[in-house]
Image (cartoon, one colour):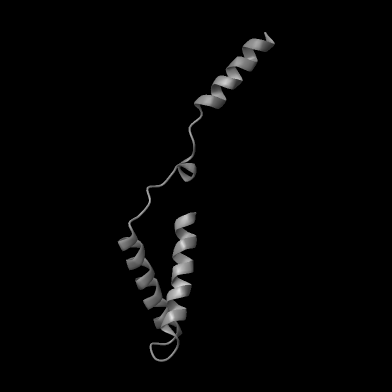
Length: 72
């Protein structure tokens, strides 16, 4: 009896599907990633101030944010 229950539990564990959040995602192209970073950097600069500031820092912050979002 115990073997039959153990076998059923094992079968359930092996046939259980992964939730959508655990499935592997298709990687995006470098071009799309570059566009996402550029757009994010633009919005960061607009939020800070359209005049002055450092575009490189905006880009690096945007790059970090997009990398974090894509790695989720």
